[in-house]
Image (tube, rainbow over all chains, first blue to last red):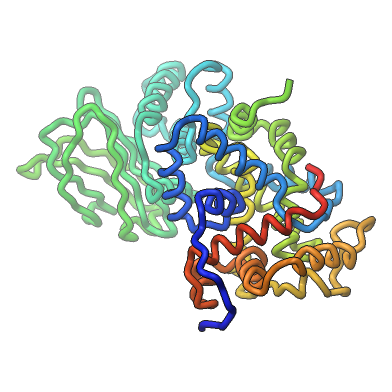
Length: 265
Length: 178
């Protein structure tokens, strides 16, 4: 619907765009374009733009209202509740510990990384499934190594979305010189994420089976020593309680290279 | 010595509750004002502020001090959250919600909602007709600039410049305390 309001044709300037961006009034695509444009400017002009935007954000024309004093505590309590309910909770603890140990290390803990690390926190509990002969210290050392590897892995928002689900189930597989990985699935949605590392080059296919029935099969190209992550949204692994879930990596002839099963309880 | 923007958000991202409290101390008022602009009643504004701070905590590790100062980042997150919330409600506030509703509950028992609204009304009266329309639709009701341009049959650049200059005029009123 178009309404008639007279308007002089007056194009916007860079300053207009900076002001509108500072107040969250630009579309996200326009905001990104503006950031790209700013990158091309000399450092002094970029800094001037940053200062202008900060001034506008701090002194935006807003109602002169003051929150009640209890709101501070309410915000902290809300965040604490959200943290407890989030699968990232354990991860936050993990990150805090890492921060203390590596205080001067480069900081770039993104949310996806948090989710991935949370998954590994859960996996510590699952390690008993196939590492029963290892001492606790050995398990911890292995787990720490995996965490470092995961930090180098870029996980897409889609994978993160699946990993962030509460109540995920995990099947960890690991075999000397054959690689390792995890199958993480959500019993409600059936979606799953397959993470692997160091699988042999002759792996050509992966199968996910439920009580030996193949629920998912796909060509699989192992990426050598690197971590790789694959997301599958096929509702293939729903309601798995009491059933046996198997992940199997096969070579070109269909011969199993690495298989691991778990009875889900 | 206070933490820098980057240090503060680092600590917030690490789950440091003290740092989270400091984040609220620095920006709680600002976020509440943004919330009130979209949801001019106390309980809804307070709910929205809590949601924004959870969002700030969740996105803390994406903050890049080289790209923007923290106040700009907070404003962006807050306003985008309010627009998302507004769209979920399927209703938008009208300008009247801010300038003439004597029945709404106040944000603070010590503040007079009528006074708040009258002050905004005075600021808006200084604007041209186009500026009033653009401010009402984009700044208060959360329509995008493109939507507003289509609604008014005006070029996007004109809407942008009208809005920017209208906000500059409105900003000339009493400045809020940080």
